Image 1 (tube, rainbow, N blue to C red):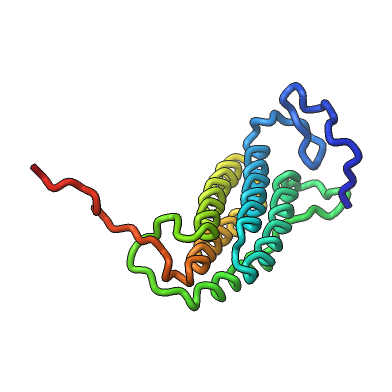
Image 2: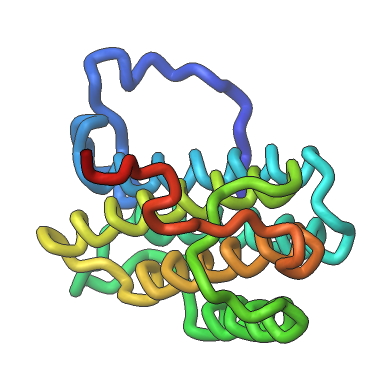
Length: 193
């Protein structure tokens, strides 16, 4: 259980912070950037929910917000060969499986795509597209960390599926794709003079 009795500690005033194992690192460390991005994504999902997504989506987005705290906790505690004093919280394949089930459920009624979708349409769809793009950026940050330090591979898989789900949900929020704004390649190009 998390217990927060003080919000400021002054231990980060010199630009350092502590990881879950107590190791002090600079706040610019790729691990801090990775779970800071996860926190940003979580906040964006909170914004999406209050913008009025369909009820069928708000509960699963809240579920995902909770999962994103699991992702952050996983990233906060570096992988180690030494046995930890307590079992670490790690993202599991079952959390990825849940995202895939939601993707399949919301994708089935969508109209087939014949072009890329421009972010927009309804307010809910537009905010889901913002969440999707933040999720892609966060995934890249996690992969950059994974290139230098061992991490739980389920984290990157989870974020990859989550961005797919957010795309599908954005289309579902646009009347199951009927309200999508499609890219028309070269639509505004000037003809050669």
